[in-house]
Amino acid sequence: MSASDRRVQSRAAIELNVEYKRLNTFFADYTRNISKGGTFIRTDRPLDVDTEFVFALSIKSLAEPLRLRGRVKWIVRPTDATPDSPAGMGIEFQYNDDRERRDTEAIVEKLMANELGDHLAAKLLGRKPTVE
Image 1 (cartoon, rainbow, N blue to C red):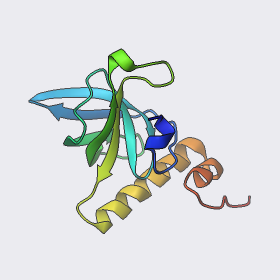
Image 2: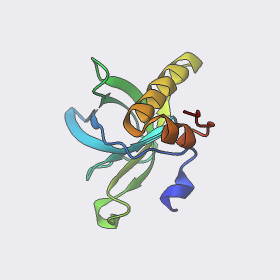
Image 3: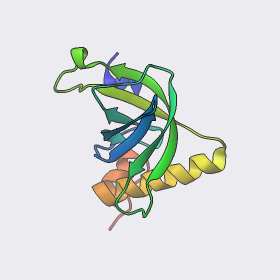
Image 4: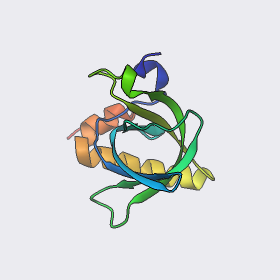
């Protein structure tokens, strides 16, 4: 399955520090990209598919890391990694309710606009870019 087949929403290439805990051990890795529905965490130690976990994204525009709950949807093991498909895990965000989903999506949209500019972010999010 190719990376594009696994994605439901367009992703932006954004690198953020991500921290999470696994069996009493903390890991610090990096995201490779992000969308409103999920992210890819680059790591040589991917969690098993269907694992739910809490992770924190460090975003420079936020005073505190953004804490999210996610589920591992797919993985690329180090032995299967290539330059175009590095080792890591595709994460689908999990929400307690619609409000949490909307709040997280708004933060991701703002992050994409700050990192990529409003025009490109709007195109990736499937909205009509504003005319300047």
